[in-house]
Image 1 (tube, rainbow, N blue to C red):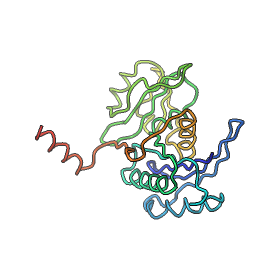
Image 2: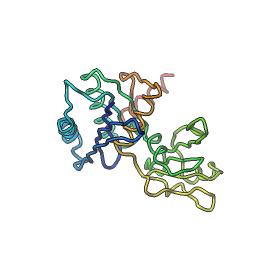
Image 3: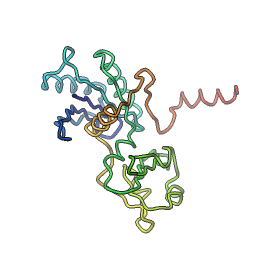
Length: 231
């Protein structure tokens, strides 16, 4: 199986082709996108070049498409998800969306408890807490927006903290230890987690797959407020 991974929510977008092997390893080719301000213009040619180099294309497409569903860059998320959906539909291949915090958890150092924290601006962090159990990883706390200081107090127990807002949440005295090298997932990690989930039987409706945003944009916020007034 070959997985095309797309990550455009973070500060440096990337595209990867991942081909797992029977020994538990994988052959990976990854390209980091350089023109982040021109992501829409760079993404499609990069994917085409990678597919061509791997001998892939419309007649022999990847078996699975994986995309980071965020949160992250508003524009980047929309571009990445549109590209992933377009390719999956054109190729007749399944599509799996991977939330950024899930991919970060998979990158975290060993530890029973993992906090994934992303800088949501406006003095807030977007965070989720995971527990690693013998049966697998489970979410202890659903993802959402928090004041960093209040979140630190609420966490109460020791944990490894990852993400680009780890420093805002960490408190070594309380056992909340930051892993500074784990700030944002790449397309390789998105593809690897999607492959693992697909192998376990997970499937998603590509039509219903939506990006996760830190905050609503102005137009969406106005629609939400109008809906509240009508209700």
